[in-house]
Amino acid sequence: MFKGNRYYLQKMKDNADFILEHMQDISQEELEATPVLLDSMMLRLVQISEDARNISDAFKTLNKEIPWTDIYGLRNRIVHDYGNVDLGIIYDTLTNDIPKIKEFLEESLFSAE
Image (cartoon, one colour):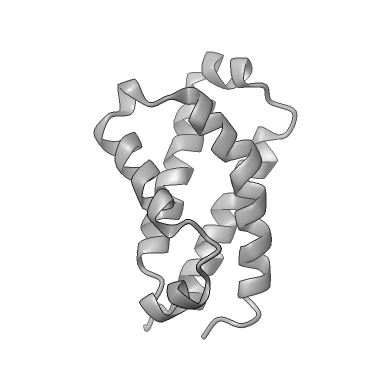
């Protein structure tokens, strides 16, 4: 089975939906005080990054408004330096960046090959 852009964009959107559902009305303090939630959210960010890596270069070139390099960089920080990740950046990503990325993903799913 060929897994093209649409497949990976859908997976990214599913993870964004999960994040938004579970982060609704959650403060940074609550996130930091709930290890299971924090781990789950960071895993979802890693999954988004892994799927983003599988999007074609042509698609990324046409959609430069998405900070592809930042998405990969955050994944690397989480995976390789888990205990020292700035949780303020994680919280900001979850609450500010993920809604924007989700909106982009919803629009992109209509045009993805």
